[in-house]
Image (cartoon, rainbow, N blue to C red; front, top):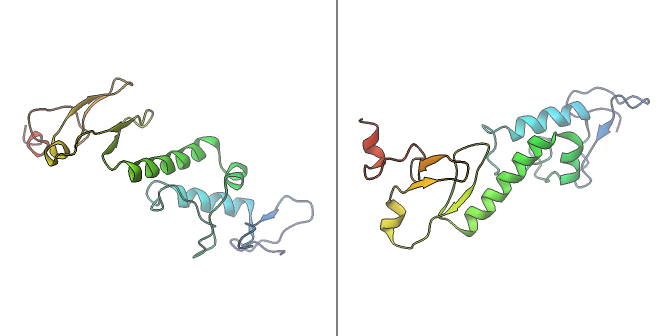
Length: 153
């Protein structure tokens, strides 16, 4: 391949515009197109795949491997992708899982108890990061008031 599938620039011999592809699908893009499309795909507004990153070719369902991500994205972005994968896995294993709303913390809490009443209770939580929040609406604790009642006051 001698042309990027995104910007249609030619690959040069000196390597300033190298082309890259996943082995599974061989969709060739320059490093700039890979980075910009991966960043767009992994933005919170677009992240419907819950931590899964796909080839940047439109409609391709091949998953981008960890080493490719490491070569293209910064560590902070990769960390957020993997945290999203962990949250999805934990939520699948334990549906009564909630996370601290503090973006820099994201401590995991498992709500114990099988009664429907427990699932509907707004329980005040104090996280290890000192954040206090309601287990239902994630706002400041307001027990015994219901979540939908606190907006009235």
